[in-house]
Image 1 (cartoon, rainbow, N blue to C red):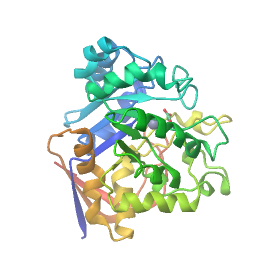
Image 2: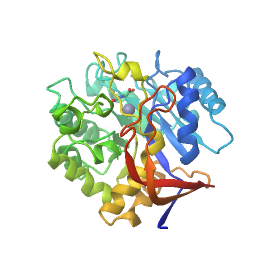
Image 3: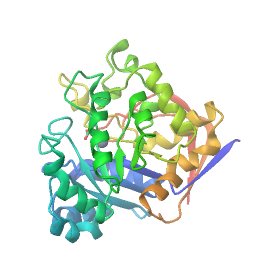
Image 4: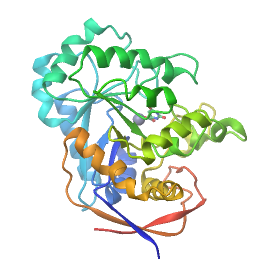
Amino acid sequence: MKTHTLLMPLDMHLHLRDGVMLENVAPLTAYSFSGAIVMPNLVPPVSTLEDIQAYKKRIMAAVPNDFFEPYMTLFYKNYDKAFLESVAGELTAIKLYPAGITTNSEGGVSSFDIEEMRPTLEAMSALNIPLCVHGETDGFVMDREAEFMSIYELLASNFPDLKIIMEHITTKEAVDMLEKHDNLYATITVHHLLLTLDDVVGGMMMPHNFCKPIAKRPQDLDALLSIALEAHPKVMFGSDSAPHPQEKKESCGCAAGVFTAPIALQLLCEIFEQYNKLDNLQAFISDNAQNIYGICPEFKEVILEKRAFVIPEHYSNVVPMYAGQAINWAIASVD
Ligand code: DOR
Ligand code: ZN
């Protein structure tokens, strides 16, 4: 049987939530990933030292014996330098949301006034704290990410020593932006390597494929595939796996978020094999992230095998992407 081995997989953008949901989903990621950047968009958001420490404890308590490192993040506000110095040792990055742009982002940034942000972003540069950005404006839904490119431009040129991660990119414009500034990096989800807008609303409406940023056009998908399959050194895997209870997805006012945490590695093997690029998957799934973030995860070896695997209909009360469908790769073992 054909197999493929991945070492220390990392998910550089993950929503773990809290409470019962955390207990249900954290073990699924901890099983096959060495670590994950954990998003801070709880209610209320993770925004103090105590929040970070207490959330990390809850994550560790939810994870069984598997080794798993939650890389903690803080919800961006215009923090002062003294505060950032006091939390720097406890976090891996700071996540910036434009206010109201997505789930639980109401307390985010409402004006990208560079001078107002300067003290915080200069302190982050000095402390080597990366800035992870949800890059969407409040414009027309298909243009939101492309419209945000001018803000990336402003951030990258004003703060050349700040590592800026363009999170979950979905457009050719973002792929092109990556080359324009040395300090810009990106994460790509697995669902954005598979879906276009047609898979969300082109036929029957598919709530489990609905997320923000929404999947775009075929040419955008091609641009994302081109840099992911080559494992462009500035690009890393970040699932943006965002669990919502089934009733919040299959309802009027469907919550944004695609749940892929337990099937991401299998789907990535399928995609990379399809394009004959399996040899590049290790860099996309771990090595690039280690280089970009300067992290060194503990050893974990995941062996996948090429055989039919039917994606479960549910993981507790969360419906994964492609629920009930057969894919070609399965996890054989984790050590
Ligand atoms: O689809 C999304 N879901 N996009 C985000 O930015 C947030 C996420 C969530 O937290 O549910
Ligand atoms: Zn996210």
